[in-house]
Image (cartoon, rainbow, N blue to C red; front, side, top):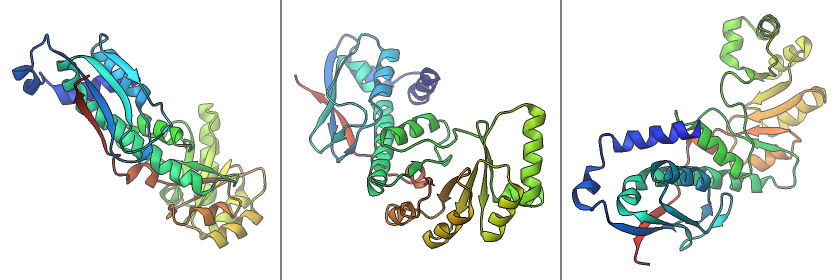
Length: 278
């Protein structure tokens, strides 16, 4: 799957040829380049871009100085590549796009995870990802110390507000889901989102779910809700949670905190691939 994604990324950028490079750099030229760190953060994507070079040109020599999950600082050199100059130039943007975005996500995740260090809570990502790049973004969350929520619509049932409204209420949504899973012989966990205490009471009365997501609940309301939810049911907080308030949510005793901002609103980390003379 990773190889297919990489080939798609390369084809998207190269098309029928890197004419800028082909026009002025001879095929026989060889060179080297360093990955320069221009912004502090957490490195993510090294193993992926190693595969980019392997697929595009197995003759490229890759010398690695940093690994995924390492802290990096301005002035560091994360790796060096040596080989055909055309290869280095043609793959440059694909390599940087992967590294810069994954490193930004890993950095953001690490910063939030550090905020709640010492509390038994897991920081989760969401499906608010870039189409076609979800695998890499979720891997970056993991590298940054976070945990992955469901990958897609197929590996877990999540009954959100619209599902509940379209199904005709909390009870209908849960009972229909249980019947569907039984009929299809699917062994999937059921999570349900609640918007208020009334919906929470309905979920508790109906039962049959594995996790309850308390959406846009304040920390004080979550503390109250946790006293109502049996220990056998997992709990998750979501909605409006940022690095500025995540600690207050962690202090409630919630088991999971999901944050869409881990992936949907990060600024790429500043990295640069520069030709070197050595």
